[in-house]
Every structure is written in structure tokens, then in C-alpha cells.
Image (cartoon, rainbow, N blue to C red; front, side):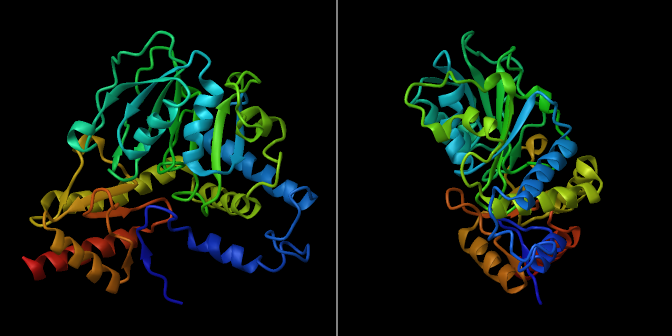
Length: 360
């Protein structure tokens, strides 16, 4: 079996031992005679799987008791509507626009109320995080929204915005479980799992209980009410059973690796290898302000589109897959999530070094 180093932004690399374990259990999960793919979500066996996954996630993130954990569908993009539908009591919210996904969430919110852009880094192609220490937030704003790590542009909030007492809502899709987090600073923290946690099809929403009410915007579908899913413990309808099972395996793997503090150290070490090379390279350049660099997504360019394309093609032949940048920005991007081993980043840097020498 020859596995490539997969630098995809999502669906992304999963820990090999987790995949191996799932393969071993594919036909018969723990002696029950069937696959998790085939079992009823109402069965005792599955109930244990979903409850254990939630318990392990609570443990990893030290989630306070007054927060609910919901395993939902529709991806992060469906949350762009669910959040205003459930939280916009005054029909007003402030958005900090640091990339394409924050912008899409902002545009979606405008359907439901008055969404205000409190800050934006669009003036420099989202290559930095704006200063959010003293924002002009409307008094009656229901919440302040951020996308904490910007997958396409490779920026990350190192300091959370000063929300001036307003509820903070954060999309953490591409930095989920990459470092310790103080959940109590957020009203809602959510993310699609297909970058750092599991296969596509699950979105995890961690939401403070006081924000879960019957009082949603008129016309909110039953399936888009947080209360529906919170009351039913994520089993209102058939959930993405197999995806949740895989997430549960990744939670156990993370605990085995030493938890989120250990992951942060590993992630910093991996990112440093790549950023240090970019900072001294004559050919390759990182595109993000140094103080705002993501540990998860590292965009870089040569400045020549043909050379970029040549690099991506030759990297693929060398077993370094999915290095092409997002279609909206071009260039290259290496996503180095939790499951990317350090050797993968070292291989990438060694290849970049060779490519630079050969194409100087």
C-alpha cells in the first residue's frame, strides 16, 4: 500500500491508524455482526457510539456543562442561515470579514436582518486579521461573528475580538481541535469536520444553553432549530451515523496523542518547518502577515502562474498531493492538519528546495 502525503484543505487527511481501525471493523463492529454503516441509529450499540463521541469531545475541549454538543448535517454553510434564524432576536448582528466563508455567512445573514461589517481585511486580499480590540459594534447586536481560521487565505485569529459583551459566534471548521480553546468565551463554536476531524457530512455545533430557545425567526424550519436537535440529543432524525463514528475514533486518537495541548505543540513544530523555509526562499513566498499565520493552512506563491502549475504537477508525481491553491486565489496551499505527520511537511520542504534549485 502506498499512501501519498495529502495536503488537501478538505476533505482532508485522517490519521492512518483510525482508518485502519475502521477498516478492521467495517464488516462486523465489535461482534454485533454488522457494520456501523448498517445499524439503526436507535440501537443500543449506536447509542453508545454517539454518547461516547460526545463525552470524549467534552473531555478534549473541557466543554462546560451549560453547553450542548450537537452533531448536525448541512455543513458549515447551513450554519450561515441557522445562526441568524436562531439568534437574531433584535434582527441585528456584527460580522468580521476575514475571508470568503465569513463573507458568505455575512451575505446570508443579510437575508434575515441587518448584518453590519464591523471590520474587514478584504482591502488586502484577506492577507491579515484586522485589529478587533475596539470595534464599532451596535449596542443591540445579537452577536459578533468570526471565521477563526481562514482556510483559503491562511490567516488565524490569535486574539479573539473584543465583542464588548456581545455573544461571540465562531466558525472553527479548519482549526477545530488543533489547539486548546476556552469554550466559555463563545456563545456558539461550530465547524464542519472534514478538515481536522472526520469525513465530510457532519458539522459539530457547541452552543450555550441560554441561546437555545423556541423563539426563532418566523418561518424557521423545524430541522433548522437548535432546540429540535438539542432536545433530541442529535437524534431527531437519522444523523450521519458513520461520520459521527469516525469523529469518535479521531477524538480517541487525539486523547491518545496527549490532547489538544500536545497537538498545538506538534502543529507549531510542523508549521515552523514550512514557514521557516518560505521566509528564506528566493522563489517561494508566503502570502500572509507573519503575526496572523495559520498553523493549519499555508498558502504560498512563486509569483509566476506557469511556475506554480509546474510545481503542483511535479509535486504530485513526487507523492505530494492537493497542493493547488483555492480556485479563487491560485498559487499553492499546504493544509497541514492534525493528521499530517511531520515527515510529510519535511518531504514537502525538501521537494520545494529541489524544485527551487532546478528552476532558479
